[in-house]
Amino acid sequence: MLTMMPAMNSSMIAVERTRAVAVASLLGLIVLGLAWELRLAPTGSGLLAFKVLPLAFPLVGLLKRRLYTYRWVSLLVWLYFTEGVVRATSDRGLSAVLAGIEVVLCLLLFAACALHVRWRLRGAVHPA
Image (cartoon, rainbow, N blue to C red; front, top):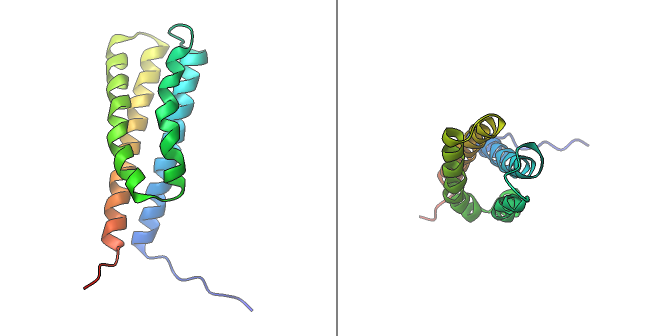
């Protein structure tokens, strides 16, 4: 006997897509930060790789669909955006390119988190 899955409306699809983009861009920032500071364009002894540690904390919350996590990650990401802009304009070579990628990932993460919160709250049922 086949069970029918309820049809997903466009709001639910948008929420799932923004979740996927948020998780992917957060993982991208973590991988980029580690690769940048440890392998691609290290700036010292590798201690700057610890800068990605705060990005690891919200990963569980995003995967568990915690709305509060999406809200505060959309604020945290601006620290990394600022670093990316500063290094994109002051560094040269590969480091400047990596900083540009960081900026793009930060913008994707912010947009995904903001839209995710908006569409989840729009679809929420409020008691009368």
